[in-house]
Length: 240
Image 1 (cartoon, one colour):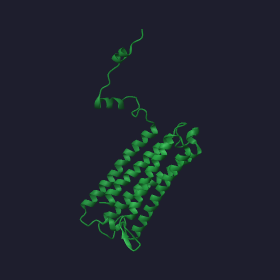
Image 2 (image 1 turned 90 degrees about the horizontal axis):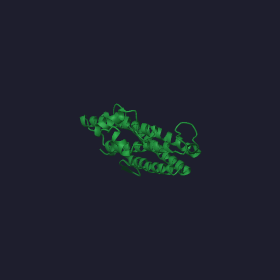
Image 3 (image 1 turned 60 degrees about the horizontal axis):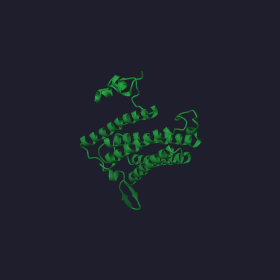
Image 4 (image 1 turned 180 degrees about the horizontal axis):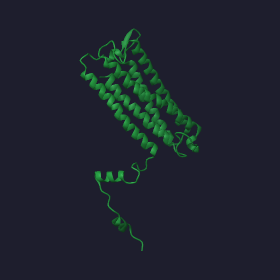
């Protein structure tokens, strides 16, 4: 005799709720991220761990700045440019921020068109995002060159607190490395999208199941994270 649904549910063991339920899920043999691919889950885990790294860097910067007895350099003067006979404060940093934030928009559009399986639009928007990221890195390299020529070093600078140089090169360099790797992977994914690897299911790196453009979405998670981190760096390092 077949059991009714009420009899089956009554016979099944009741799952605990709250924290006990969460512990039961994680300690069982079930996947903790139900319905989420391993690629996306691993990217989220990486982003969480990277958040702690950037958080430690920014906390170290704030600690060094608040504990030093030597005056901290004025960011408006240090990062200003002399254009047309006038000193314009933070003009380069403002352009860099605008470029990087704009790249988040093109990345979001790329993911949107990837869901629609529009290969040409997705690949084009990924390339645009990569070009904007490359422009950001290029402007950052110009900023580094300018400050090095003015005497800024990891162990000192001509404007005050010696911790300024170490904080600047460590934080912006670490973030710039993330952007550089992001540009490389964006171009790789764009090439695969353009060739139709995700439609054909061609085997290789960053190739998901046939008909799935999940790698574009995973790349979008990474890129939005890099842009978000820059917002905090911009606020704490350049505006403070």
